[in-house]
Image 1 (cartoon, rainbow, N blue to C red):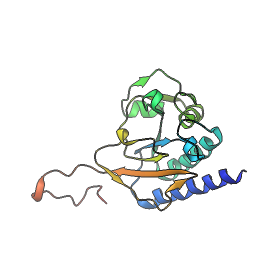
Image 2: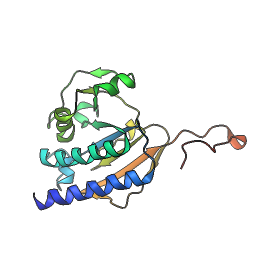
Image 3: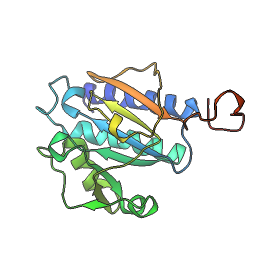
Image 4: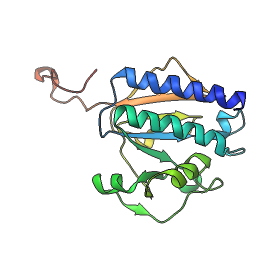
Length: 187
C-alpha cells in the first residue's frame, strides 16, 4: 500500500476512534460526510479526485457505522447542489424525497460517486437533517446538520492534506430559567 494511503488510513482510524470515544453518536443517528478527495491528496478542491482515497475514507466511515450504529450520508459536490447519497432504507425511515441523479467524479465528486457504487441500494436525496458529521477538505456540510450544531474538537485535525471539522448536534434549549434539562442528550 502506498505510504500516503497508509497515512490517510491511519488519520481516518484515529478520527473514527475519537468519534466513538466522544459519546455523541447514537444508534440510528444520521452522520453526514463531506469530503474532497482532491484536498486530502494535497490539491485544490474539485481538481484531482481519487477513487483510492475515496475507498480508504469509505472503509473508515463504514467502521464508524459498524461501531456506533449511525447511518451514513455522503454529500455530493456543489455541481449536484450538495445532494446526499444514502441507503434506500434511510430514505424510507426518515421520509426523504429521492432525486434522479447518479453522482460521478466530475458531477458529485469522487467520494459520493464511490459511495453510490459501493452502498447497498443507494439513492440520492436533496436534503437531510443529520445528527452529526465530518467535513473533510472544507466541503461545507453545515446545511445538512440539525439545529443546534456543536463543534467537536478533534485531536486529529487533518486527513492527508485536508483540514477536518466535525460537529454533533443537540436539541434546542427552550423554557428559560425554570426549565429542567437533566435527562436530555446534552453533554
